Image 1 (spheres, rainbow, N blue to C red):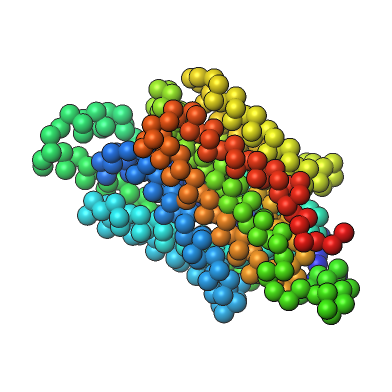
Image 2 (tube, rainbow, N blue to C red):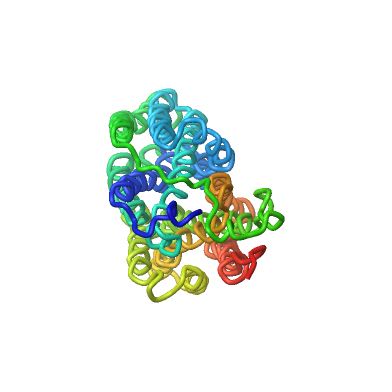
Length: 429
């Protein structure tokens, strides 16, 4: 990318719109944490593993839609791509209504998959844009600022969804279990499922209104297809000819896979973890908010320190070491202490995505859009890892704390490798 196309300062308008988009992404992404206990109760699911398919349906969409999203953005343009993603997000929300009225868990999962597809398109557009609207050296700082809005939405959503969908869930659960199958049992489940109607109609309307705002407020263009300055200095035979000539990109996508895996384990599974610890309903219902509040603390640390005091790579390495330490501490403690250590993983996880993403797409030049899509595919880690945890816990009957340890520590170890070595593979000194 030429100096003229690489901004030396970050423009306010695109940064502000990106922050609002990250708020929307955060709200719908972290809604999964509140939906897990809701669907388990409302659809009479027998295990946590079944309920974790809420996460699978949401995050697996990124694997299938990220590369098509890159093609869609190329055809529609950046602004229209954002509008399309928001319209699709509203459609996914509205699918919840017939799913609730028919009592169909499969249709409910379809709505979540459509939402995930919309977010895949949105992520594919906004992440490289955010990385390039200012100096690449401070990309982690900009993503951290946007992350404040993302995780801020995540802190709000358990109170909004939990307060509506899970109101009186303890009493309702006891009543459902006490009723034999029949009209009264079905009527109670129907009343519970009807709670999604007004909520998701409002959410769909809000998202559509923001789509109109995006259409009216044109985003300043940034050409992510131009080669960067260092690439233009290479001789013709040394220039990269294919996306496969960037091994650090694929190692970065795998790092994103494990990054999202540990984020989801700490952010969405904490409610289930708290229930296994026999903690009061308050901690089960609002666990996601506690983890994301800790992530906010981490983002503020990143905003203050990157790149002024530490590099993106060093921040990534420090975060993984802290993450491993907290996971081990949670495993060997009990009760509220163990729960607090899981919530504190939010601090450790906060700077991983902001550091991994720019390291993964650095130096891609004209391949940046495709590379971004490949990185976004890594979000599928959030689909796979909860199922692994659920399988260990519910099928193999591994102790829930040990299962958490076995699932999370290997993921952190790979991220540590990427922060130390992986991001340099295939690059010239």
